[in-house]
Amino acid sequence: MRLRVFAILTTCGFLIFAFTMTFVPLMPAWANYATRAGLLVVLGALWWVARDGYRLSRFRPVFFAYFTAVVGLSLGFFLADPGLKLLGLTTQTPIGIAVAKLLQASLIVIGILAVARICGESSASLYIRKGRLILGLSVGVITAAALLVLSLLQPAVRALGSAKFMSLAPWILLFVVSNAFMEELLFRGLFLGRYEPLIGRWPAVLSTGLAFTLAHMQVTYAPALLVFLVVTFGFSIAWGWLMQKTESLWGSVVFHAGADLLIILPIFSSLGAA
Image (cartoon, rainbow, N blue to C red; front, side, top):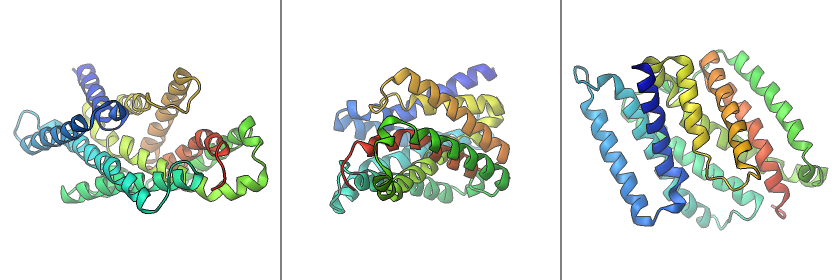
């Protein structure tokens, strides 16, 4: 039974992200709107009817998580680009990429927090809490520092030069922190605590890790996609374990930000001035 629930949760989690972020560029506009609206109606209805005493009541927290994820991702999808255009920026420069990520991440996070508040969910249920803060930040800082060193050793990054690197540093930091907090909240903070009672601690980490990895199938910045997905899956397991171990998302956010340096530094190094 637990294996069946694991398979269902993992499949549903992947489909939620597939139809709201991964495969969106392949969908016509009408299908994008219809899919999001349909998901919100179905998931909202399931959350509403799955109250105490109903057959699906134990899945109610999961329906909430799916619904909330769609709300957040839809806000980011529809409003981030107009916001960037309003600021007169494009994603052809480091500052444009960083601000675009900040806008997208902020909208997703605001959507998640707003729905949680309306539904009476606490921020602690999203792992936004102190937890074992010293342990989390210690692991996060050490791993982020190691990943920074690996990032700086990449040939494209070494060719940047210290002056250009320092000029890009604020935008690099803005990007990785925004993305790391948003993704840890969206993929793990929202789901881990709601999956655990149904399938257990490690299966919850595995399920959210698979959903996170598969959601990145559309990336174009990885020269070897399969290698990228394998590494991403390994990182996602580590982030989920750290979040459970520290009962907080802060350590995972710092660790995740360090991992994002491996991606964003080469991208920024190929662009012109900020």
